[in-house]
Image (cartoon, rainbow, N blue to C red; front, top):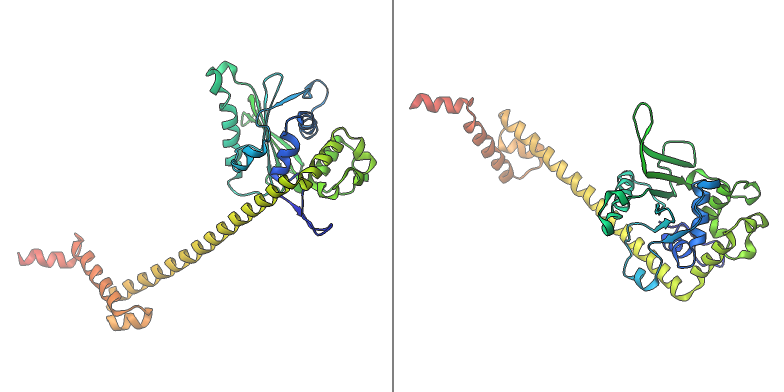
Length: 320
């Protein structure tokens, strides 16, 4: 869930697409303003629809994070109206991701009942997924989904909103071409590794509210001894986990292929026996051991004897 850069100083730089850096920058106590600016930009909120202020519901705490590497949502927040915001950074798309999106949003919506237990107190939950790879089959970088009628598209409710921002569709690498607030924040999210200090920022980006603070916080995360140690530890943990998954999948595929091959050989042997071939000939044709073929022959005989339509069974009846 991260993008690393080795181009400068031979040292890896962890940018905002790394889930922990994102947490540090946008959910540390005192950074509520930065999260507000980010949401207003990515959700393209304007005028009276803009978020004025937020309370971070899962503030980043270094000691707690060391023992909680699998939190469900990267950043959770609530505005003055009680609306919940869930922000998740996901750099890799996979076939089950939409199920995960629905599950996470449902959990975030339902956890509001934990305190009061009254449906009347449920407020809107806005889920924003910042994606590194494309998962939505639409050309737009930003896509919003509601629960709505199939034909009329009239919303059933706006209590849960699904928002996707796909960085893979954004190519604004050159700041000179950036025009809107939305584009500038996309640029910082995707190409933040270009700016290891505020001095690296072009003037246009410096003028965008919040960008300087974000770059400063990102630089601190990469230079602070304890934070960087945790970032590297997190990277190694993810690499080890991915390596184990790949090894398990490879082993599973090999086992599956071998099992399928053996099943096919057994089926051929059974058919040859039914055609009247000798055990010796079946062994030559399939490579099976005589004991294996004899066992199959016995199973075939047992199956025929047990069948109500078996000629062996009819012969036995006549003898009685």
